Image (cartoon, rainbow, N blue to C red; front, side):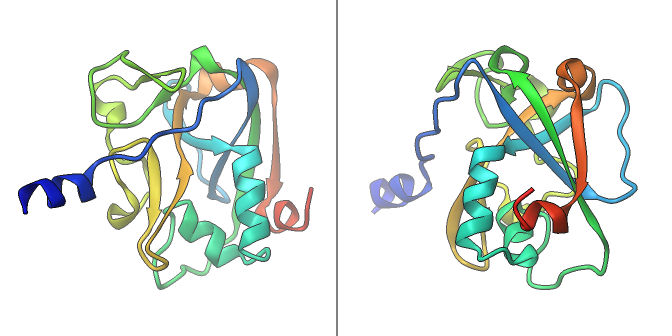
Length: 166
């Protein structure tokens, strides 16, 4: 019986990332961060797939990102897209700092915890999120400090525009 419970709680494998790719930080309009604040991000390609599978429904996408639950606050959201290198990122997950998992190191200490705004029920500690409403695994997550993320520039757009296919 204990083996069955342990197996059910085990983390699933994570996706390997290329050397350079795009990530997105989704946040409420007006939210700002400091220079060394670790942003929680997802791959843009994964986010686009989520948008398509959610039929461009903002609430479903925000749930997949762990940012809302059953009740959605009445606010505007933005998507900030960055070009990054994989060595700038870490995976926020339980583990030893620096251990490599699917090509990306495990985050240091405090960065291993749930990101700002991410709901407790969505946090797995496995480097990916969970949609508790749908009961499914959703997106792999990464952390990178703002100062590194902006190295190649960034683009900010309203989430409604991203949902439309921008």
